[in-house]
Length: 593
Image (cartoon, rainbow, N blue to C red; front, side, top):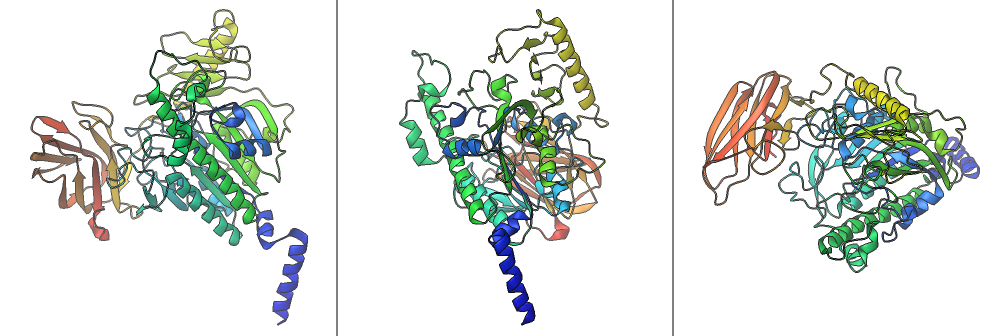
């Protein structure tokens, strides 16, 4: 009885001092929710002057917190995600492109989740990872304890399970490694699960780190929130692009795509409102740092303020995002800071906000920008930001690259073409090249870029070698090889097209017995297919009847070591690669998925 009354008295004192038990729980730690959208441009926000798009909750978030107004990201998504997760230039991480095996991050890299987890944080990711779908590159291999993601670069891409069929509504997702059929719209699902995650952690008095990375408003665009699409479809969208449309050109397809993109963005905004409401309900509102950004420029022509450029470009329109930071306990509402900063600054900033120390051996490229968000940095040092992306197996110097300082920006298109110099304060549209009139500045920035490129390109031996998928580890008993991660091969060559071919680079950890299941698309009309599969030096062959689109090589031995997987399907005079390959360890009793 004495213990019971003592607990009651202690509880009463806590409530009198701090409010509800939920508020006490929140007061004891700082939560972090990092939200990033996919292909939402840097000006797809009402508070940044977009006259068509409705984003009231993001507008409110911007007004109620702090904002970096010159924040930079990479031109496309995987590089941004690698920078964000590691606090390091993505060229250090081997994640250099978005597909053909170059969207896999070196597993030796340390993510923010891997640093926060040992400090007591519960870590969760909801949505898009795009840094590797197979062991040891999955989010659950890189510090995330609760994982609900789609595979590859997006729903509807070749890494999607066949039954997924590109559905944003009722998608097939992966929950802690298990394939699950979900109910609802994908963005709503991610937010629902993230809110349940933090609510449970608050009940357990555990601090939370959430990485909430939507695949919207990335395509495909055939499955979007219909009521919102109808709303934008009924609007005059001529002012949605920041320039005058050619009156002689038919723009119905452009308007239709924009209405679909805007409906996805407004749906994200609605979920932002739901998230903040839930944080208030569970007493976690004041002490949760919510960060919001987009991953690159817009996926098509749209309003980009006074700038030019879109996704893939190093013009300002392709590499800018607002950074919103909402943290009532620490940040002054309405703070806007114009110093330059970038995605790799998020990692050290989160560490500063949470009070978690950086591992001594870990080398970061980013800087803690919390003093800027608090407007407490009077003597902030000058710095240069470096951004680059292009297709290819490894980076080429001075190719679609930019170096940005507080006053100047130098861009490079090709190695043999002189760089261009712009002074953004006077020329936000990057139209007046000053390289000839300010040669000393151009020379200095070019030298800085060259030094940066040489540095990141020598981070580790064989710096740009693609990571290998590991097979035979008990943490993943069925390895799925998809076109997302294959490498160039075959006469058709590159990419994801139906008739393309590729090979996968794997490391078999131990000799073992496997079933090898091959899935492929059939020609029209269907015909008998000759299937050849080579794993290292071992060759497997079968003739597949015309009415079948898969075959299983049963009870085969895979040998320990680095191997190449090469699968060829021949139907008549057409040669192509498979859609997916499943390497299933028999020793685990796992059945084919």
